[in-house]
Length: 106
Length: 121
Figure 1 (tube, each protein chain N blue to C red):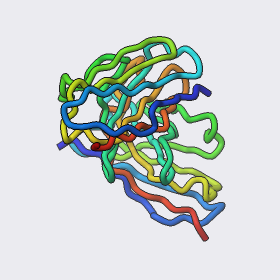
Figure 2 (figure 1 turned 90 degrees about the vertical axis):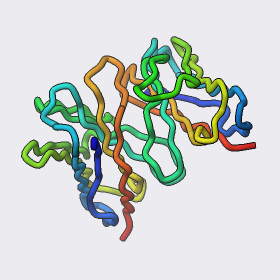
Figure 3 (figure 1 turned 120 degrees about the vertical axis):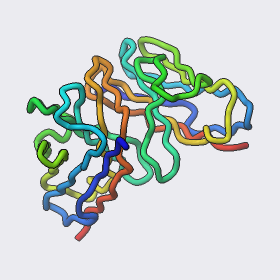
Figure 4 (figure 1 turned 60 degrees about the vertical axis):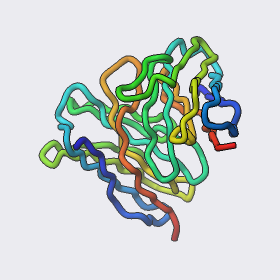
């Protein structure tokens, strides 16, 4: 099984900040990496697939980078609606998710 | 409006079978462009992929659950279902159904709101 490790597990930031979340795979997953946003009581929403491809309707302040084992999700200028939990997910083999990064308001 | 909605018993006894259905509106599960998946999230924990099914009949299951999982779909009702046998407390979770576009990059572009299933006597 491929283990996905996100860091940090939680993060406090302010509106307007630039934020980066890291996801590391236990083995190379090439570019089979997706990102989701989940708000309390809501289903996860797809943000980015295949490392850097923005899902339809996702604001351009979200971006993704990486390959192999190390990946990042960056929010260029935090908006109030961005405070949520973010998950990475690999699809190189049996899909698995990171444990999540909770982004909170400072 | 495109929507997925999970339904099923909220309480299941240990050793029994958990059965859930996902009703799809605004899209046809008969479309060959999509797979239909189940994902769960135990309370306070991360997400776990259970498996997927395609209208052509193919299924893929998480190896860790494969011996206990059965997925099916009903095109006449535009629904798909999951059955998980011999449940234990570890199967207590919020269960989501999701849509997965046919792609090398397995990502889930639409999710239901989830239904909580508690395994308890």
